Length: 339
Image (tube, rainbow, N blue to C red):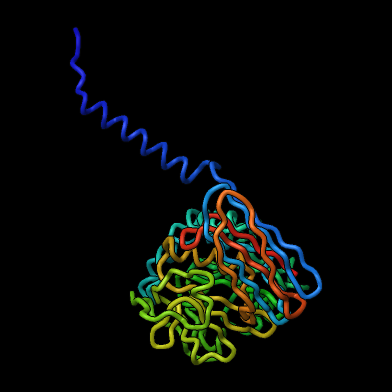
């Protein structure tokens, strides 16, 4: 028996195949190559930017006032997350996420920005990790995507391991819930009274409601790094926190990215729901070496077309960081160079 082939169906299938192949090439292949270099000398940094295609680029020189940028990251993945999520959400509006998936996306966002020193820790491993770096936590960072921490690390007191670690110079990144609202002790979820004052010295956290910022933070960081997220769930009001620096987008004092000093360490809170805009902002902040003491010394923008271009920036002091990225709003390469 012979079957009549519908030409329209054949063409449709062929078109689908082209789309799939196109998506694969766009997201998974190395059809384009990118690169950057930097050479530091007295009073100057010389850099190159390369692309096998056509890309805009930005070269940003940061002064960090002597604070060491983050060089490695531990992402806490809470294996007991679902056990108390409903309770935590009911009390605080904590946002749900698939921790393993989101951790993978953060790692990928950092990888193509040249930041590869990333590990994951479970509840049972977190205490050992913090203790292993407690003698000098500067340059080490911890990311919290859960609504609570194990009591071995955080118990709502000033003398707990987490606060001791930050006091000595560690960096804490927090997203998706109210900072320090809960800890887990055995099979119980414990709510902390005065958690905002403990971390920030004042009540300053936006509630878990969906609210979108309407104003760009006008200090140069948002444009230079092309920050995208404008959701304000659990954002900090940087206007009431001593020494805080805000980035991204703001409304009534609350900003989508806020750095806060904590003794010798620092806290950075990324507000909003878990989405691609937040992930992109996280990648830019961590990979670039931004800190609570960062100031933008210079930004050079340009375009590279199937080749390599060179540039040079005057360096005002030792210890600066040069961050180069290509692709503009939809970036495809980044790398930080520490002087």
